[in-house]
Image (cartoon, rainbow, N blue to C red; front, side, top):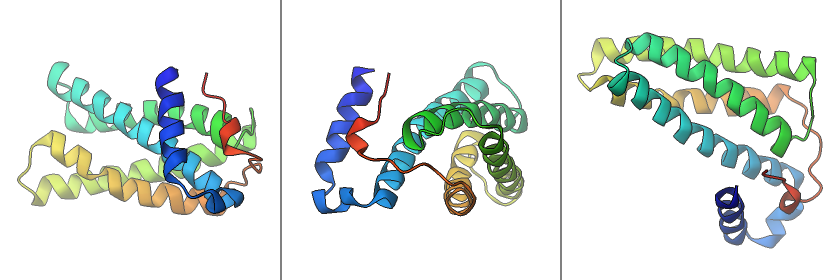
Length: 156
């Protein structure tokens, strides 16, 4: 957990203080930080499933996405939105990310059909598409609690 604390301090040192006064900026920073962490964990999961366990690319995409949704919900609800357990938020979160998974799956199908890259690269190429969807829709439908001070984010 000290690694998370160090990363948080480095990120905060790069953000001008006047921007940290805005709750939307704080949420965006927290959401982005969690997104980066979950993306790297997801990429590792994809690598292990494809290259070590030799799963089919579609099964790999599905499993890594479902696992990443669980991890992302836990971190975002605890660290970013501080919303605690809410059935409504959980339902909305899964709805947004499930839709994103379907979009990503069809993107992967198109990539496999038209692009000559390795399965690992094709899976990774889906990430920007789903990230854009997740941020846009989550920002519209999820109503996070205001974060009073980003330095109070508890990463334990």
